[in-house]
Length: 68
Image 1 (cartoon, helix red, strand yellow):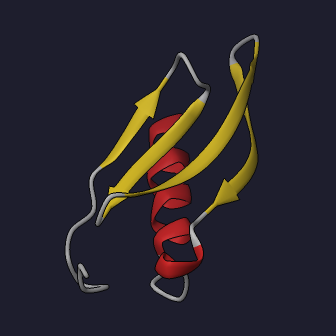
Image 2 (tube, one colour):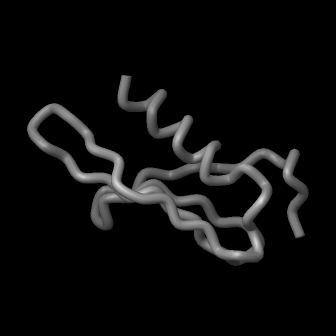
């Protein structure tokens, strides 16, 4: 399994309205909705095998930085 310190690559999937991270074949997501020029973050989802590694926090931070 990838270690918690390994860099993760976050991608924005506009078709699915979510940010995604693939780690060891597992998909973690942060869903969002656009309202005009605003973005509303709705939900993070991290598979149980990836929990406790801060992945949701890293995805959220990436999305917030991109939204600025």
